[in-house]
Image 1 (cartoon, rainbow, N blue to C red):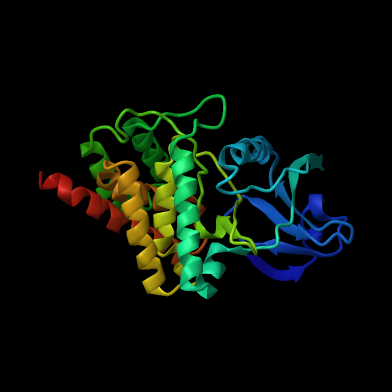
Image 2 (cartoon, rainbow, N blue to C red):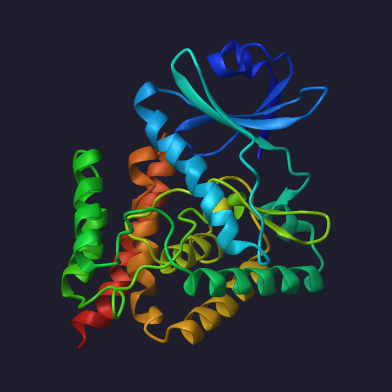
Length: 308
């Protein structure tokens, strides 16, 4: 999403030489800007700290590999260049004329929304049947979820211990996270802001990141973060509830068709997805909203387990 136009280069070494830039908003730990170069507008993503260089480079390489897997279902911007400026790594991508999914869904016709859902379904089917990206995939497991929740608790100085408690209890009571535990391809951060829709209705995916484990169920949880958890609405970009609920019901049906076991892990995964935001939440409003969602999902996951 575009922020107000400004000279972002005045604040980041990798953008300093460009006069006209638009900062792009988001929860990324990097600086992202649209550079209005007269010869070729492009998007530059730059690390804010040298310690973040390795993860940003990994993201660029991951983007290139994932693009090959999803070809025919969705596209991802090419990586045009990778470089450093004052010791801070950056990579460049072409500017894709498009709208993010929040904007598209708020203005689209219902036929357009149905087509969007169908394209999203084909994308998730492709991820479900594709091998993981990277040399060292993490098979989905209960242990990795336990470790991630413990890490979140530690990174937030146990500030959200009460909100996390029901989710942690539900995880302890579950058996395997995913039957068989085989890793698959995953985008890692498939929010509505990271799904772009071009003029033909085609999907473009941006901002892929590593997940606590490599499995497409983590991408379902990100989609449900939007159409059930209403993350976009909290961010000041509400959609009609009829649209989000229709998407929620349709996507849950598809997820269950692909893997009937998914529904029993739905709220554990959705709670984990919201919990992952807690260390990065910057305002009291963000922290309160996310903590409430984590507690709600944890309770929804825990109740049927306790009733067994």
